[in-house]
Length: 279
Image 1 (cartoon, rainbow, N blue to C red):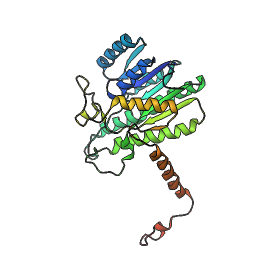
Image 2: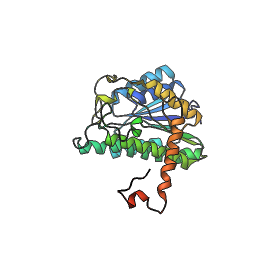
Image 3: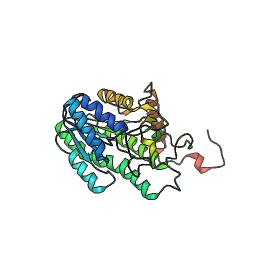
Image 4: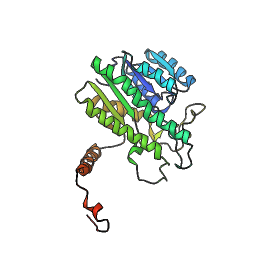
């Protein structure tokens, strides 16, 4: 399956702004029918009307808060339908802030939207795609997934957000390996700072008003999506839109293999004698 086959319907979550809106735009212009999932009805209704008029594709707005169990179940039911051949798990919220100070309920919501929802929706999509012999899932993560020990400034306070995006990277890569030669493709796209409205709020509530871009700027959302769809065509599992050479991904895989040499039954000498120095 390539991203321009227009073999059915693409479901895009978080479609009311930023990267999600750009996926909707580019897929519609490639001839895909769309299901647009977001909390802001007025935005996805307006987008649906415009894309129908400009491209002639079918566009179905689906208003849902993916942190709400009933809404997630409705979206999962739609994702499992026979016409769906592409799922874009783009919806995400950040919950930025010093960990001891951020409201615990907001951090729970970050996990529900960034981890639980894409996992549930992917599980809803993959069996049918496998049975029909075609389909793809794109999970939108972040380069903050790889920013573990770097302190805040200029990076945000991101302990939970970064953890959720690390989950998305590992989940996608492991699922891609599990599916192996399956006709279903799985990709995780890891953009850096992107010119959207993402930093204008923590995600507890939608950003009000017209769509706009945060002051920090970043890569245009259209370029992120262009990279993702190109990588989907070539079967790239980890897509980093600003990375010139894929060698960094290969080096990551090598480092992981080196770490896994510690899975044996013998305790490392450095833990037997903590006062001794080991190279």
